[in-house]
Length: 377
Image (cartoon, rainbow, N blue to C red):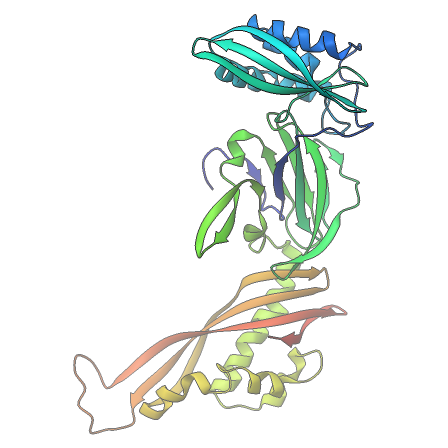
């Protein structure tokens, strides 16, 4: 785990995408600050505060949309980050004047003429008519929280109740919640799930740096700076009950399938691992099991199966709590010897023990108390 990221437990997938909001939403105000000023008074106060470097006063002038995650406490927590940014962006400001440049039903737009040590610069500022609040384009952000289907998400101990968007993503069934937050505030996000271990992420500016979502473009991997994606580690975090069941029913079953095939045993005995008693169809369709991938070796070597070494889950894809797609790795050993007894062998013995493995990608369904293979790729 990278230093600086706080994650407790093996987290269910959480994905957060940041999209900065540059407009305003009608009737979306949450009255965090008391009092109402005219737009003209607000822009005058903004200019004075900018020149006098009273950046905390500017925060009091700002509009915040209605959101369960933008509270007086969160605004207070994010104040230092806001002030730091204002100090950096407004170094050398000496004077500020303004002109009204546009007006709509809800908004009055002003152009600020700011005098600095390096000359004049201009900025456009919007003020809401309804409450005299300034709309600052980077003060709050819309985020998307992405989790596996059937997850329950809480932020700062409060359950997220909005209706999520449901979709398939990388063969997983997921749900996406949209929330509005303060980028400079800290949020405690917890996720519970029936199949995967419960997870917790303390989301802040530092942790965001370590959980960026990978993006592939032109065969190069980059990162989305505002996206959190914990699905990759969820596959290692099955709840104990599910892990035990899948190891017994599916992993051991896959090991027995490989063993029976390599020993050229009775395929019909494997039907007990299949929901539809179609073990033979599974074996025939798999190039590892049907011998296609070993054809070249079998022409040159006598191969005798020796033992199964291990069978384990490589990857989990979530459909629902009773349906999963698993990638199961089965490793084994075989005794191998050259068929041509007169062949000249350089640098080693004629006989050897070969270690190898097979990857079985299977869809699993829980039938009663037992997991069985229901289909495959």
